[in-house]
Image (tube, rainbow, N blue to C red; front, side):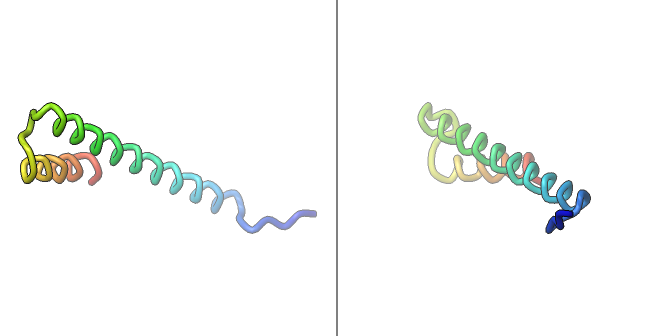
Length: 63
């Protein structure tokens, strides 16, 4: 008989937490990519405007 460190419920919760962390990381990467593209094309200006856009996107998407 094998003894596992985590049961089915704990494993499911851990898997869900990993999925949420991966989803958040993917969204953060998408935001960073959007800001980088905006910086390269000059769409949103530069400096403070881009940082403000990043903060607004992060608030809207990640909260």
